[in-house]
Image (tube, rainbow, N blue to C red; front, side, top):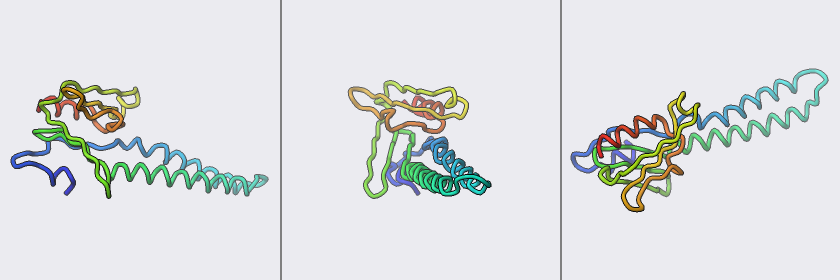
Length: 156
């Protein structure tokens, strides 16, 4: 059971949950492929073995860091739409949450690149009345942004 399910009010139910899209793992995966290629190239005759092995180790370290960071961010983040509100939660030991009642939502701005449209991810900025909002600096590269928007607008 996640954070969202533990804070639901009586009679409130989750309409839609999303998270960061899997494209967050692409940079780390690309470095991992380069590390494997560098290691493979070091075994070829007449190459600078030490240089290619060092490069492979450095690329592997970078890949592990990027993949661990993306996995951790995805693991500690919850983004949900309930019948009453939009909820954004991040953090493990220290928790940060933003919640906005659906009735206070004035505008939802979605930004998608061409690749984002093809793979169904994008940045979402939920703007509310006054100065409240859940900005696109938080909701970056989330999966299914149009479906997220539809669930928010259906409840507003």
